[in-house]
Length: 154
Image 1 (cartoon, one colour):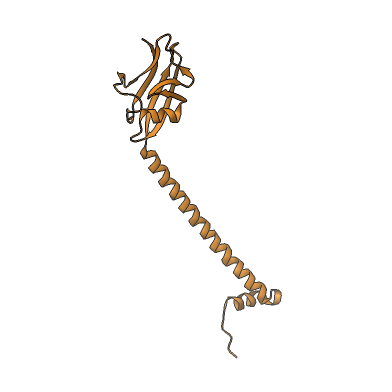
Image 2 (cartoon, helix red, strand yellow):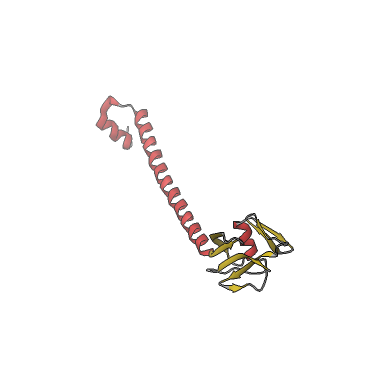
């Protein structure tokens, strides 16, 4: 009778009667599973790493940066570097990074420091050292802008 030659016969020839055929098949199956799962993990890690790299790259490209300085009437200054998306208004960016209270589109408080109508102290702002001509909700922030909010007495 003809028996086909396979890896189990080869292993049995080397190991003799020391290991039976079922043990050899089990070990070969285990080796195959370990090999395949190792390849699978490497592929998954490579794909995950690729996705993170693409996401990180596209996120960093779409975010713009500006610096916002807030100075109260007593000259206490807070400087914050902010990131934002193209097309966002100054008001949107402010609300994302500071505690803002507004009334009819005008900022009345930043981080708990309020204007004082009785003393005639109000919040004003400049962009790139130029007095703003529109309110913060209508001003579209650009990459690299330097914004200065300050309290002024009128």
